[in-house]
Image 1 (spheres, rainbow, N blue to C red):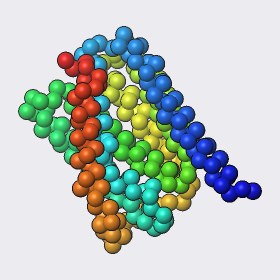
Image 2 (image 1 turned 90 degrees about the horizontal axis):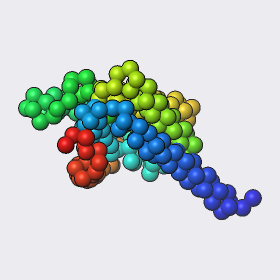
Image 3 (image 1 turned 135 degrees about the vertical axis):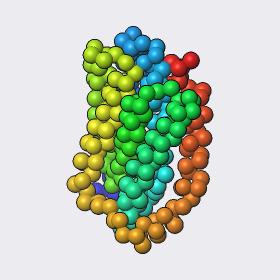
Image 4 (image 1 turned 180 degrees about the vertical axis):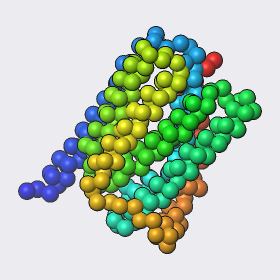
Amino acid sequence: MNPDKNSRDRLVRRARALLVGSAGSQAIAIAISPLLTRLYTADAIGVFGVFMAVGGIAGTVAALRFEVAVVTERDAESRRSLLALCLLFLPLTAILTLLIEFTLHGLGWLRIDHGAMLLSAIYVLAVGAFQVFLNLALGADRAAWISRGQLARAVTTAALQLLMAKFAPGGLALCFATTTGQALGAGLLIGQMRGSHIRPNFAVPQLRSALGRHRHLLQWGVPETLLGNLQQSMTGPVLAGTR
C-alpha cells in the first residue's frame, strides 16, 4: 500500500465530510429563511436578530479560544488539560454574558425580555461546547462526527422553528428553537467523542501549564475574534429586523 495515497485519500474523505456538514447546514438555514419571515412578525425577527448577535459573538469566544489549540496538540495529556481548561471557561463565559445582558437591559440598551436573555446564556454554552468538541474531533481525525453534529443541529433547529411558528409565533420561540438545535448538535458531538477515551484533566499544575503555553490565544485571539464578530454583526443582515 502506498502511504502517500492513503494519506491523500484520508484527507479527501475528511474534506468531503466537512464540506457536506457545513454546506448542508447552511443550505437548510438559507432554505427556511423566506418561510420564517412569513411565519414570524418583524418584532419577533428583531428579537431573534439581537439574540443571535449576542449569542454568536459570545459563543465564539466562550472557551476563550483555547479550543483552537486542541487541534495542534500532539500529546494526549496536553489535549486533556486543554479540554479541561475549555470546560472551565464555558460556564463562566455564559454567566458573564448573562450579567452583561441584564446590565444593558437595565440601562435600556438591550431590548429583549428576560427569557431571551436566559436562553442566550444557554446558547453561548452550547455554541462554545460545539466548538470545543469540533476541534477535539478534528484533532482525532473524526470529520464524519462533525458533519453529523452540524446536520443534526441544522435539521433540529429548522424543524423546531417551523413547528413553533404554529403554536407560539414570537421571538422567544425562535430563540428557544435555535438554542435547542444548537444544544442537540453539541450533545451529539460530545456523545460521539466519549468513545475516543479523551477525558479532561483538571489537575491544577497541568491546567496552569496549558494556560501558560497558549496564553497568546487569550491575549490576541479573543480580541481579534470579538472585533471581527462585532463588525460582522453591525454590517450584516442579522440585525436588520431591529431597525
